[in-house]
Length: 292
Image 1 (cartoon, rainbow, N blue to C red):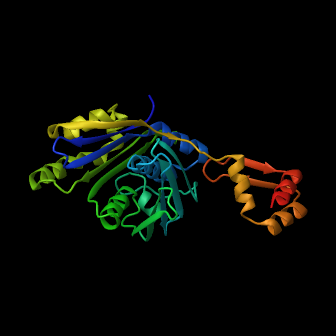
Image 2: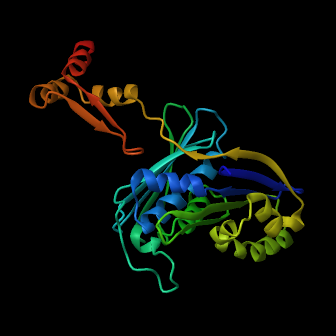
Image 3: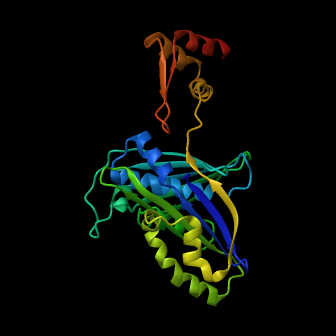
């Protein structure tokens, strides 16, 4: 079964929910980047969060970028998503390895680090993209995203993200939930909601047990008469192309491209997101120089 996200709202329009199942998407990312279990969990949580935030975008060409820059050994995590369910991402150090936490779980917080920034870039096709940022609170990804929504966007939110890594290091189950309260929410509904969402910290276990996003919606939010307003498939896919790589080369300028041609005779560019190599031989470089 393919990965997908559902978006739902309660009958009183007082809160909205995004629920994702992302097991295949995160496994694809793991295979692409050959990540260690802890890097798989960190990247998996980030791309799952980005996929749900991508669904919040209005325009077909809009993009959202999440960048976690912490002081931990993983260094940088980057994820880019659009509102069509396409996500790409990578970590700077895919081989990071640390002892598990006291409760046996992968120590993503230590890998990312508690000091640093979460930077969110929304590209809506305008002259300048909207850039928001917040300080990391735990490095565990979900808490940092919830903090970002509250601090930078004044949007009180609860976020749960989970990746279950199997003994053979493949992804057993992965998913996420974002709950956002809307301005007209009543105190009584908020209290009920807060009691119910504790179960979401076990999101990857629920998915591993076979629960679908719809099952989780009924199980956690059933009493609120939820209505599903959107369902979208999601996938880990890179949109890099030779043309795009050529643009990157052009941005270096005539002088530097000439130096590459004279010294190396060719250029090889590797895409960070999918590790695909794009080669430009001497003739290619000469054509680029001529066009400049």
